Length: 141
Image (cartoon, rainbow, N blue to C red):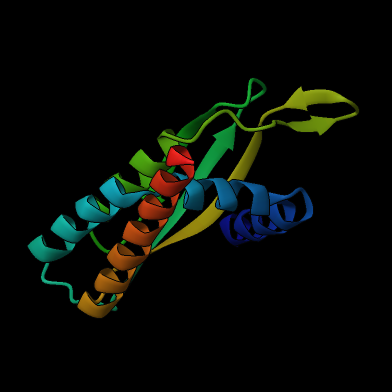
């Protein structure tokens, strides 16, 4: 019962003190290279496009803004390892403050990995290609 209360408290604290900023940073840091790693893990474990894998994470943002003490739990250790890798690559974050002083703050956040379907992958590749072409056009002008 005590553990349940702590998890609920952490979740409420995260929404009050701006966990959305953390989840936005996680989404931003997940790039094409990460998709390829996730695809290879999914193939090893026989997952199909459209499957979603949830990884529950708990981590601390310390007084300096570093993400430390990362723990993860999921259906397979490879997904846990990937979630830990993604969180450990986050840039420095603004630390929580108490009475104007930076403090360490624990966060809990689910990370959901969604395996791309072939059609979604084709659409993403087309979109990325158009974006690169647009950027090249801007550079030439």
